[in-house]
Structures are given as structure tokens and as C-alpha cells.
Length: 129
Image (cartoon, rainbow, N blue to C red; front, side):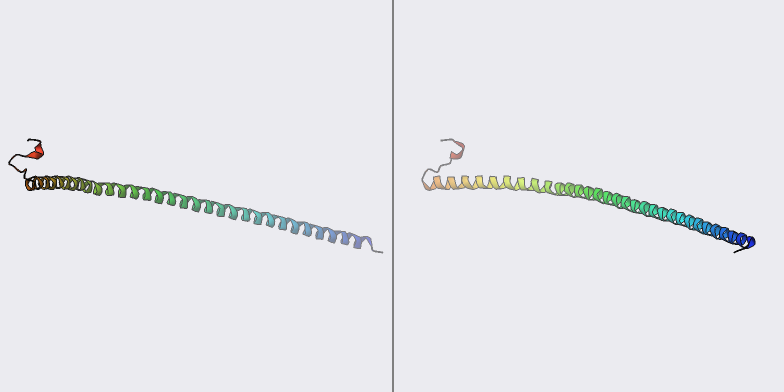
């Protein structure tokens, strides 16, 4: 049987082993909490960076959309300004063509009357007999 002194030393050793185990477990627990905190902080930083990048992309897309709208508006206004003189020119051409057709018809009518023997110095197109 072990002596009282050996039993005492065994108890001391067991106590030191238990203390060391508890200390190691405490250190491991602390290390695990630190790692968990670092992981959380890294995840939060990544989340914020992603959110910032998404917001930046959204703002850039919004600016591009506004620029495209403005450019489209400017192009429409320029096209309208270019079309206006063409419209006036077209109206003048149509009026001139109408007058030419009227004149040609009057000339044809006068030629027909003259050929039919009804030509005289009076103007029949004005309704004067």
C-alpha cells in the first residue's frame, strides 16, 4: 500500500494535471472565441465591401441611364430642328408644283379652246364670256 506521502504527491500531481488541463481548455476556448470574433469581423467587412460595391454599381448605372436619356433628348431636339427647314422646303416645293400644274392646266385649256375655234382674246378661265 502506498504511503501517505505518496498518496499526497499523487493528489498534487492529479491537481496540477487538472489545473493544466483546465488552463489548456480555457486557452483553447479563448482562442476559439478570438477566431470566431475574427471570422465575424471578416464576414462583416466582406458584407460591407460587397454592399458598397453594389451601391457604387447601382449609382454608376443610374448615372449612365440619365446620360443616355439626356443624349436621346438632345438627339431628338436636333432631329426636330433639322426636320423643320425640310418641312418648310417641302411645303414650298408642293406650293410651287401646285402652281405649275395649275398653269399647265390653264395652258392646256387655252390650247384646247384655241384648237376648237373658241380662242379669242378674252380669258375664259376667269369666267368671262
